[in-house]
Length: 560
Image (cartoon, rainbow, N blue to C red; front, side, top):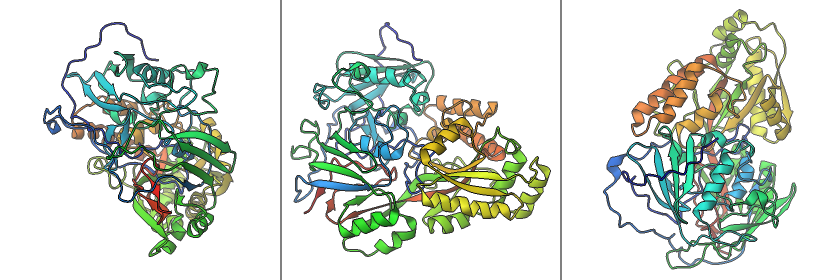
């Protein structure tokens, strides 16, 4: 719980490299969830914090508006095909990527991720950090309006309220620990927000890009709306209607504050309909027929059918969503590290890539994306490869006595079911008996949270900083540590990684050491990183596809 302070806040200090406000900034990294869709690859390449010598000391950069597309057409409804619908509506409480794809178009954050996977101002125009790295000061954009029924200007008090809410244990936000290093957050006038820390917090800027949605002050006590049912943000679209298991509609916010370079109001679209089309082939069929305009993901098994199409654009870029086998480390017989190691030696990752991902993936031994700038500094010292003899030996040395293990997997995600079946076969070849149990996704996540499972096939996605790929999953006691993994040395290394500000190589060493321990103790068997596949009709213009996989439709228009 953060502490309120009434002392004056030091606002002087060295200025961070000035962040040019980019009105065309793309979506911030989607929340990574332990149960994200197997066909939902999303995430961002890891990037290092800005270096001081990038700053030329100039204060004369001015905000730039999004470029005006040639021959832009206003209006119309874009229909986006989604695998699943809303799982809650409170942006501080939801975990599902499908929900955040909608809310990303409704809410705003201080900082977002641009197409170069760098943090840029969204509701914040710029920010500074003190010499001791303990005080961050953000200047807000002026004239930003909240949606009805709030219908007033965003101020620093709203930002303070939002972070106090995120930090409150009563809220129960799954992303609370991203912000617990904050010791105090306060307003300095209407347009300045000050965050104070007891220790440097290196990943803070990137944490703001995921989970830090800004709500109106007093949202929990409001009498004219219920924030858990009616999202009220500052984004380009207003939440309109949700029909369970069918669709969610958002409409253009007439008072949205951003414009294009010619001063034209954004968004260009009148409406976006997020239509639930669970089955991948159906999404492609609907895309080709024009029933939907944009598909959140393309099933790898059908991706090749879109190549060369004049009606549909297929986009394939490196992603940061990885699949893994989760081990319940506190439940026998998987509380025996030798059995977990045996499973990792039994797995043929290339067979998973080809059999379940049709080649649209890259085998991995760790949670750092292959294209990440951190990859050259963070890797497993002694990686696993399929070695059935070694797997059998470890299985014989373990406490495993031939009992049947259950592999829980989300039944809504056929590619992950395929992975589970491949793993089941590979385990059988070394004498480990397993049964695949496709389970309703919500039920499965509850089971993982409660420790009611043996093995699971699931994934993690959507982040930039290495802390995001490791802390919540492997630090003891964290909400997404569903393997119930605990190691004091790993905890200390991950905590040191958070405090090491400024020097990328020094900071990376903590994560490099931690992943070696994690690899030996095997709470996860890492499998592969998915490619990010998406598709849209040729009538969809000005859409930017980035490896987070989370769409923002602010700048999109329809040529119809």
